[in-house]
Length: 253
Ligand code: NAD
Image (cartoon, rainbow, N blue to C red):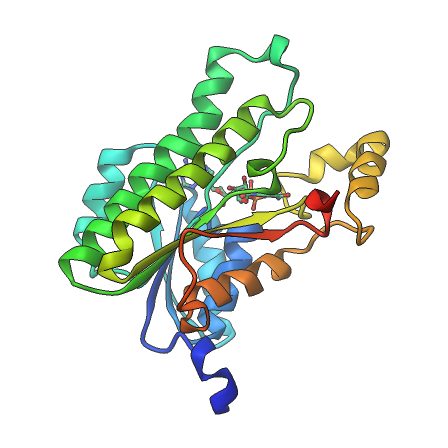
């Protein structure tokens, strides 16, 4: 790697990515591994993870799998305590149940807030515990959304969860900055993934979304992965408590 790009190298770094079996998490895992990181892919489905890790190894990367449900916060913390500390954590597992508030149930609340907020907070706690014990500097990247900065119809729960993760990120950055651990969010607009595929089967919804994205197209997972590489690496060494908006201009007006 030429010196101009040395700050982007992740050689010798250990990175944990949740929700790594597909979508944005898998793309981030591929990019961090290509930059030299030893990646640990976490999700619930072993077969999905084994296939994802095999693809990374076939491309010359180093990949391990951790089969875990991040909503089982005690089991996740126990699993991490048995592993060496990580340098990079991508808190990516997330979900959405779009519907008008009048149709939102307590079960929807528990599913969305339980994964996007509760699990994300306790996953960050478990990873940071290892970083602190090993006295490592580190980078925690919370995958938020443009919906952590604006509102949208049918997204009361999702927006609540992502606005909360923005606040969590700032508070944790204040707490961990003195220890050399940086904490930031990535806030993508609509990205083509298995999670959003069903939404775009509705042509009216697709037209509405494309009308808000000034670049006139949906985002691709690789574009989120490139931002994650920046935040994971020393290239972003002065950045903490910040939100990186990858919204194609959604929030510009
Ligand atoms: P996805 O549904 O395609 O993938 C989610 C991944 O999380 C899967 O690998 C799944 O197995 C894993 N996962 C789900 N529940 C889990 C659990 N309990 N424990 C461990 N792993 C679990 O989703 P995606 O579209 O790639 O979204 C990833 C993140 O990006 C989410 O936080 C989402 O809110 C955010 N995001 C997505 C978009 C988008 O348009 N796709 C836009 C903005 C933000």
